[in-house]
Image 1 (cartoon, rainbow, N blue to C red):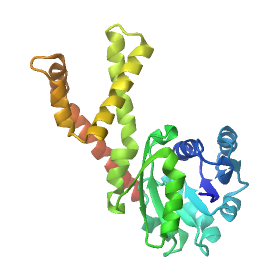
Image 2: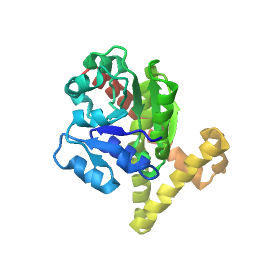
Image 3: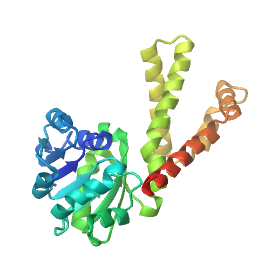
Amino acid sequence: MNKTVAFIGSGAMASAILRGTCRTQDSSRFLITDIVPGKAEELAKELGCRVAASNEAAIAEADIVVLCVKPQYARPVLEEIAPSLRDTQKVLCSVLAGTSIETIRTYLGAPDHPIVRIMPNTPAHVGKGQMLITAVEQVSEEAKADVLAILAPCGTSVWIPESLFDQGTALSGSSPAFVYLFIEAMADAGVESGFPRAQALELAARAVYGAAAMVLETGEHPSALKDKVCSPSGTTIAGVTALDEHGFRFSVISAIRAACARSKAMGEGK
């Protein structure tokens, strides 16, 4: 893929994608803009990307545009860049949480513009991300392949219908933060029991990493894998019982529900 790509915004998600993709691709093909003075320059210097003088200048040079601003800025930014995009067939990739393709097209004033919606997560930074993608019918197969090529170094890409994007934002986009809390709590327990902090953190993180790999690589249901570790009257079943007593599963389900509800609310401008 030798297309030029413009990133409008250089926040957490843009940084995660760029850090992932620039590990294996020509970083000079990526243009960055940001409303915060110096923010785009700092990221570009780190990764070897280029900084555009304005959003309009970035779009003029780009083949693909990736919109990575905060959802509350969606309307003013889209209305600003609309004249640069409206009469082109340049694919617009949106990383705006809770913002539907229909809403994006309304703000652009371009009901048939080719748009791809993406929800990445921050593990893209190290090539272990999960990128949820959907696209309108005006996006060609070639353009889809170009988008996948951009995202490939970031991790795994999964096509889902837009109707599941709020749920996917919670289950995939937000959930790494929940896992970090779990790892932190495990590490704290390790420190309490006598381990040095760094070693406790490594042991906890590797346990989570390995458990996730078991689910993905064996294809077995998590409950079956859990049962294999829980010997009668053993240490693991004692821990599992304690988690259940304190509402661990319900807390996780509630966290996903809350994140999903917030994504929907953001899409409604709340």
